[in-house]
Every structure is written in structure tokens, then in C-alpha cells.
Image (cartoon, rainbow, N blue to C red):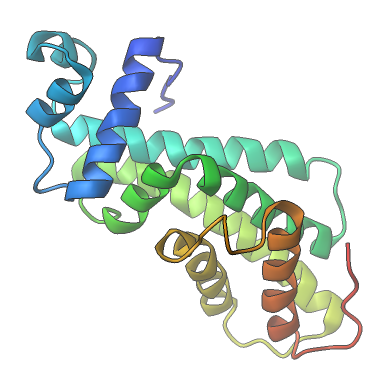
Length: 202
């Protein structure tokens, strides 16, 4: 089912605040009342946009993966080189992370909280995202004749690097922008291809 997440400004603000509260308190301790109180809204207004806490969590997760995917596809268009694609993946993910810290945290911690059709729709987006990254790593594998037995593990390791930045990243101490992306790309890529001297900078 194709979802339309072109929400009005008030609904977007509800999602932003809900992500903040869920990231801070955890899904179990987050409540619709907390979200309404933070926004200074009555419950009836909030329920007009979202019928339940489950729907809020679903919308946060679906919108996050949908945004990551749509942005990635645009950036990858007409790019052929595998290493450039890897750079774009990392840049796209980290740039989203830096501006949507709460949403990334919610998706990382509450990945298995959704159930039923909500879970399946988000899972479909996650699988599509995973497949794109897997195919790009396979392209790099073939280029360097890498003896990689399990690309799934390597792909998951890359996502592990990207998804847990929020636990330690400090913009006042750590690399920023292109330097950060290049550092992560080289760290992963050199390990992936066995520290080959043939890895070139982009």
C-alpha cells in the first residue's frame, strides 16, 4: 500500500515531538498525553491526526525510511562507480542522522516494537534499503575480486556503524560533513576489501 506522508505542518510537528519523547522515554513509557502536553494540544486534536501511539510510531519509522530511500535514489541516479555509490550511501545516511537524531534513535531502538501491517510496511522499506546497499557492496566485491562469503554480514556491519553514531557523536569534538563521511567510507571500505592499496579517494 502506498502511503502519503505529505502531512500538514501541525501533523509534522506532532511527529517531531513524538519522536523526541519516544527517543527520550522509550516507547513503553511514552504516552499520547505526554505528546499532547508537550505541544499544548488537547487530546481530541492529536487524535484527529493520529489514532494511537502505535500509529505515531509507525509514521515516524515509515517516514524515516521512506525519506532515506527517496533521497538515496535521487543521489544515486546516473552514478555508476561502486565506491562513489558507497560514499553517497554514507553521506545520505549521516546527513539525515545529523538533522533527525530522535527519529534515527527511535528506528534503531524500536525496530521490533511495531506489529501486524504496520511492521510489514516498515519492513518492506527497510528491506528495499538493505537490498540497495547489498547490491552496491556486491558491485565493489566484484571489482576487487573480494573473497567475501557473506555480504549480508558486511552490509549489516555498515548499518551498525551508521545507526549508532548518536551514542557518541559530538559535533564539537568529532569530524564534520565531508570529512566525517570520507573517514567512515575509508574505514569501512579498506576493511571490506582487505586494506587494499588500490582504494582511491573520491
